[in-house]
Length: 624
Image (cartoon, rainbow, N blue to C red; front, side):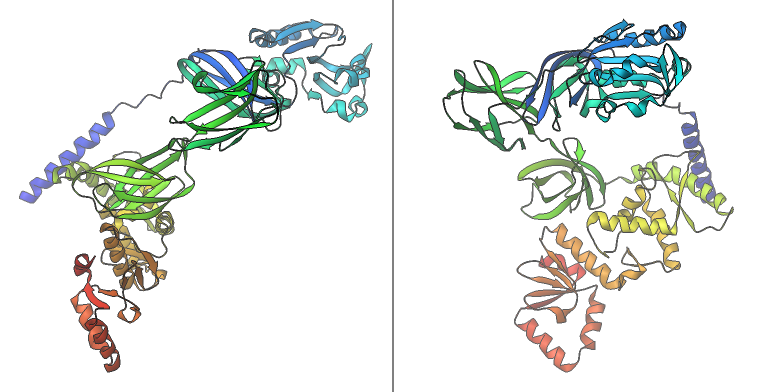
């Protein structure tokens, strides 16, 4: 009766939890930000291989920078023809007028004249014969955008003509053809060509976008890629940015704890030269150099404590004569997940996952450290933490980084509140679904969310095996058996980031073991092709004890090299001071009784002279 009442109570709890999920309001999508900001250019310039824009901003919006291979064009001349559809032409001009509100100069003409550095728009549908005759001269310093067909020519009347074949290669490279009619523009309302005009896309060697919010001043850099002009949107164009006479060389990218070592080379200065270091338009440091009358070099050592971009400027009485972009890298380390004694950190550099780097990891209350590697923005560490506050000390690129972590055991009440109720619901659903077919799939419980639409994740045998391989690769291991929690790391990537219960994982492992796909021992699981599961499990547990005790090691085929001594699984492999580890006393006795007389004698010599000790897994901690 007590069991029946308990089952009823648990069932009610499950129904209440399900009702709570069903009654939860759907989260409204986050509204798109309203772009109502303004940005005003303060300076466009060159810093070595970079162009830059310094601008003030207010509100929410974005600034785009483009590196251009030709002088930016903002004057638009529209060639108006008498035979154009007046209504459609008016609609086209209304749409084009948006560029006028952005700072472009727009004019209409029934004859082209001799414009310079302009964008000539010909929306006639047929190429005017006069423009065709003058194509080489018109295209020399202008861009021509023709909207129409390439088989129609207008010379007093419309005629069929393959006029494009008569355009020279040099002119064709500066001719942009949009094979549409004004009627098609009107019906489609697709004015992507206007964006090409806005950005001078035909000359763009590079582009970058900066999104702003609030108010302030910002300097944004862009790689020039061999170009010599910069356009900023909202519209502002630079003059030609030629290479500067003062050359600045040195390490332009450093960490906050490093110093930038730079050399400034000059042949002449107009008066006394000086340097200034600026960040987002504000001078943070600077000093005078000297007056230069012949070839001279100056050496600068700069400390740049805050991450971000800096502009180093060298100037004299004539203005800026040299500049360089300096970048201070932003390294960030944060704890992402904790699984038993496995801890996963996210490591980013300038906001992007760090590709790879060696790291030294320790705890602030211990002198022991271990080496590990950052891979694709992830750093995985095994550590035995004390209860309460712990601080990971992670050394990357020569700098210690401190990551605090409060270690606490989960209470029984919290465990049941987290896992029991959704677990009951999912078990019931799994039993019902199991009757629907016999496909080799496994149901993975997701304890953090109970969803009536997706109460479980169905995975095939191949996917589970692949998840185990992924965990091996992530940890940088090869054929090392895994605990259920570690297998959960791989499965978590297949469950949309949701946690998976250990009990569910163990049930799946049992099924895979029945199918002879995996082998298990001592609560550790490995693929069937990985070799002797018993030795592998003992070796894995030895590895864990070395990590937990902060003992540095390198792996050997038969054990571990710990520097002064070795940990081996086979006493015959002991070549210097070693500890041979057995699973338990029974295994140790079985080994000793199997030895032949000569091998037993050799073993006794090693034991007596202290070069070899025998220990069980349980005893190993005392010897480390």
